[in-house]
Structures are given as C-alpha cells and as structure tokens.
Image (cartoon, rainbow, N blue to C red; front, side, top):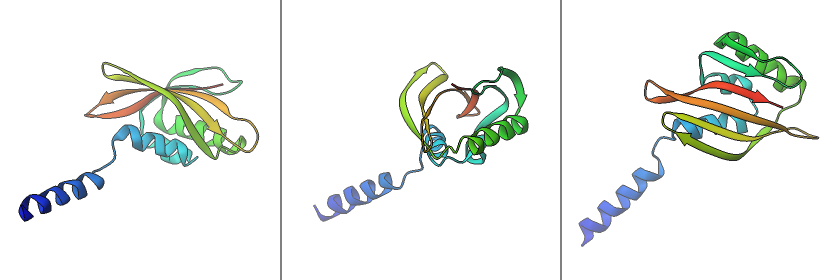
Length: 126
C-alpha cells in the first residue's frame, strides 16, 4: 500500500512539471506582450495583416518579426486574451484580443504542424 501511495505521488508530481505544449507556449508568448517571443514560433514564411495596412504574403521570418515588433511597440501591446481556438487536421486557428492601455485589437492566428510542433503561418490584426 505504501509503494502504491508513493508511486501515485510521484506520477502526480511528474505530471505537474510536464513540459508545456507548443500551443500553450505560443499563447504565453502573446500574453507576455513581447513580439520577439512570439516571433520564435514563426514559420520560415508568414502571411501578416496589420491594422490599417495591406496584407503581406510570404514575408520572411525576420521581416515579419520586425513588423510585429513595430506594431506591438507603436500600440503599447501589453498582453493577450484568448477568445477561442479550433484545430482542423494539422491546422489550428486561435482568435483573441491584444491588450493595451486603452482599447484592444482583434487578432487571428493560424498555425500548422511542422516537425511535430505548431508554427505560426498567418497573423491578422484588426
């Protein structure tokens, strides 16, 4: 009985410290309000649509990172609130609100599985 109790405690302890999923890591990156952290999850090429700007398709990871960092800094983005997400096959959609001091901005993020992890392939902010 004592061995069973110890094994149960060890199993629960192990689950408590299991690594966070890549989807949770992406959500946390947005919640941090840090564009550099979000950009770590970009695919090699990203489609990006920022507020009041034309959509740019197949922009390189570095250029997309610069554009997102500029948007975050110009608009004082401090956090993120997830509204919904949905997974269809290997593609996942997440919608939410980027938070700042005054109003928030709606965001839609599309991710796909690549190499066993999710990567961001599209960001739309309006």
